[in-house]
Length: 160
Image (spheres, rainbow, N blue to C red):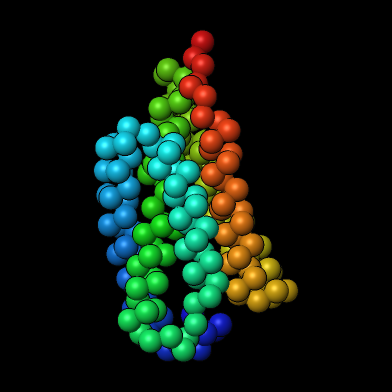
């Protein structure tokens, strides 16, 4: 936000704080919704679509927007982009073979954190080559692809 949009560090930090607060609140809300619906997978599919839409919003984020709009956009982005991991681990625990929940969730967490290390340099390279907006749109497409993958794998797990 400071580099690409020219925002002050204080404003960028405040916007990021709103995003983080929305993420915190969103984890509770999406967990409640998943319990209420009885399906973490359906909520994860909806989150893939909502996350892709929020990333499109992020791609269009503009430093010339009114501050209230920047903060509202940050809330929406935080709510939909940064709330999936608890549902992801809950779904893994549900489909894991009996007695292997720990191994299943630990390995998924390991690969999630590997992605946290690999993704930023790849994203930075994409930004360098294409700019922020195109880079975020590429990420939105990748996230959107998670929805069909989750739907395709919606068969109950076979344990045996």
